[in-house]
Image (cartoon, rainbow, N blue to C red):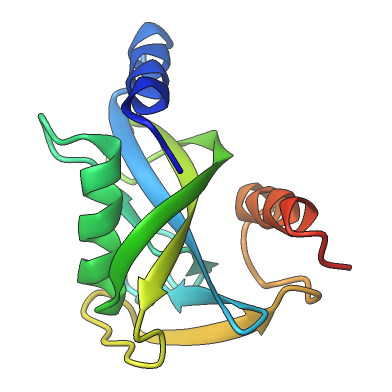
Length: 150
């Protein structure tokens, strides 16, 4: 379980590092597979597969943003934020220094995906090398290692 002390520390470190935009990402696992969403072709980094993720609103905590973004992007309700899988930095489409914090989450009704911001979704086996960025591949490697998946 993720506590407020860790979330505060992560936000403070990002502020210290000059990060302009906080982003949260979720590893949603079900039946040995992980959920990936495909960005619209006409969007920033169009067509890539990614974790359910999105920007943290001003004044919003990382955990609340994570719950909101998973719901907005997939229609799934987060029941528990299990663990922290690290972060990565990148430059957003608007040129902002962004940091994505990644967490494992549990959801209810994982078979009821409703897309509002993406073109497609897929469940990939944890043993596969997914078609995602190197940064997301590293997050998934950490997830596999923490779950002892070969």
